[in-house]
Image (cartoon, rainbow, N blue to C red; front, top):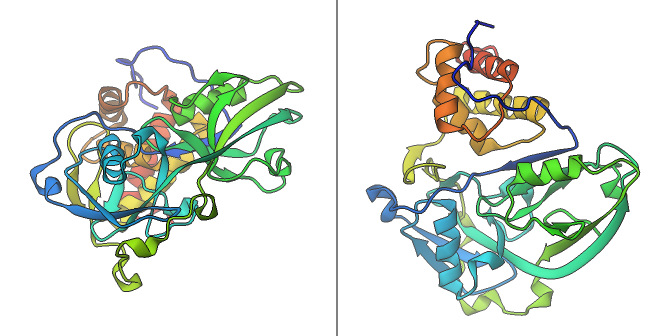
Length: 315
């Protein structure tokens, strides 16, 4: 590792956690969408059943959720997450930083509240935490055989509203992950959860509105990229090389930081696209992602992963 790497960065903790993973698209600040993006129109429905609506003119995840809420006359805070092309709680279809131009958006809203008390008998809970980019952390995966897998009341898709009475409904995924990690082993803790609204809980037949045929629900070759900073842009789908680099960086985020975040990984790969050495790359990361505590070793390995992808050394 070259001397001076990250020398312009602030001193930050190098602590890493493997208690939980987390991944999500970071919220973009309010602002006008790009001219091309503003003309795009997407079809949307509430996942538990509703007429079909249309949304357009958004430039960030937060603005998208506001547009969906406006279309269905609900509070934006009621939307937990969105899936693409399926009304099911399918974590492989979560809406992240990119939306295919032909994608159909299903919004999952808050349903029944529930509480559970758990004794932390293991350092690893077995949860993967993500968030919707607007302040709604929820459970993306539960590791089979883990402590939380044995707690049947906790389900994939549940929003974590509070931990031991402390409200975390507006916290980012990595903040919730740290709070869970910091719980002492052997300690009882309480989670207040909200599960997604199921169709049978609020009967509102989708036949009231038009539903696109299955043949038209497919990913386009172009996507709308919702950025952390700046307006949304219409881009080509990531190349195979970029996809491999993003996947590897996402794995490195888990190893070093105890989080997983596809949008963050994509932003890091983009930051390293035209950089000549790890020092330039570290400065670029500091300028765009200064809120994250990236260890020097992690920055160096990310730089190596980007280079390996370009050279065709990643599977």
